[in-house]
Image 1 (cartoon, one colour):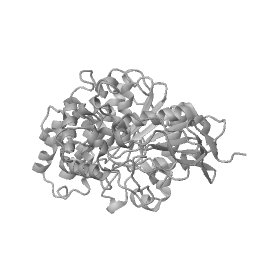
Image 2 (cartoon, one colour):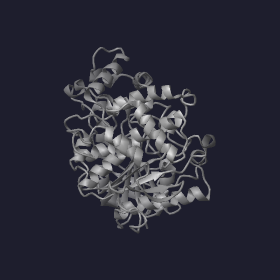
Image 3 (cartoon, one colour):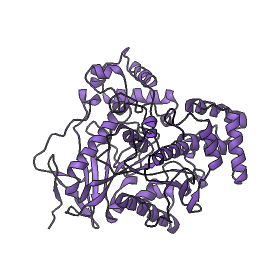
Image 4 (cartoon, rainbow, N blue to C red):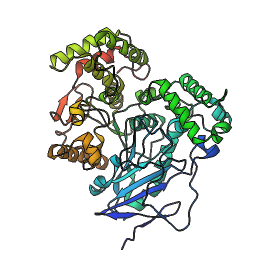
Length: 515
């Protein structure tokens, strides 16, 4: 009879059984990142003797306590450098080879944890899927980038991505002991987690480790080297240093480093601006990820990707100027977004396109509604659709979804906002705090069952529905999209007028290949 003890390559761990599901929490997949290791590639865990009690999650990666990825009641609160851990949920530690989902949390590359209450894996385990969630280095620890780090023996950039790869290597070596199939791994991510996956797809490092990927509300995300290096220099200046020196960063108290990061975030316009992100470092990421995917980097994978209908409402909800926004203010706000996107069109032309499209659909056309719709498309939907189109061009199987279920919070002001799909995917609607955001009841439960079933089927077979008629593959001429919530079903090319307009005026995907 199984006694809850599993042997890993670093030592034995004891899990906890509850209602037919085993959980193993806080298993270290890499060594603590203290001192000079703060900015080095992840290092192997020191093997332990005896049995590790895997009943409590580890500390989370050092991060701000406010903003995107803020804690929910029940989430771990302790922060620390011994944070590179993962959690496993399974229906049985036996010889059965169940499909495996590895989940990467979001949080703008600044905050979050794989041990959050949103991401409990009991529901997937009961569907015969082994779920793994993990922590990775965030903010300056994971993504501060500067040549001085490399010259000092640390790692130039992208340490958070290297952590994710280290966790995948742990899964490859150990997941069979937890009843999982190391040859059938699906990598799922939301927001910054999805962006991480898209970047890793471009690197080629997922080959042989992952068969499928799910991108929820995120495609590739890269900072320019110049911007990243300038951000690093500003960061150390707030610590009182004139130069980036890994020795100083390695010895500085963590509280001072977090305070400097908070100042950078404030100067950068908030956490949603993502001041610390991956860069093309010449090692892990050798070219811009868009260019790599446009050239076929994702062809060997099966892809499920989508966005939420009102992504941007999560970010505009607390902005005091948004309710009183007029057309002139809308134009000024959009100018920065269009410049960042490299668009060859005026804000007025974009506004007119969206106003006409929403008018035909009899949707709200207030300036704030237009801003939220344009922001959703520019930042989330269009990058996702472009990635899917590039993937399909090389013969890869792809499926697209859109999440339309609205949050009841604040009398529906959030709509189907960013991150709202998560409790539906994970089946965590019963948490009372989560339910305040997501809603509950028979209709919400039915959507959750449908989404968790689709994600499980995709992990098991590469198709998110048992019938092709229920959810056809995505291809650019039809853009078949599965809608969850709202008016559910499969539709062809939702928001096509806006998509076509933006795609026409954005730079060619991949730096020269047609979309």
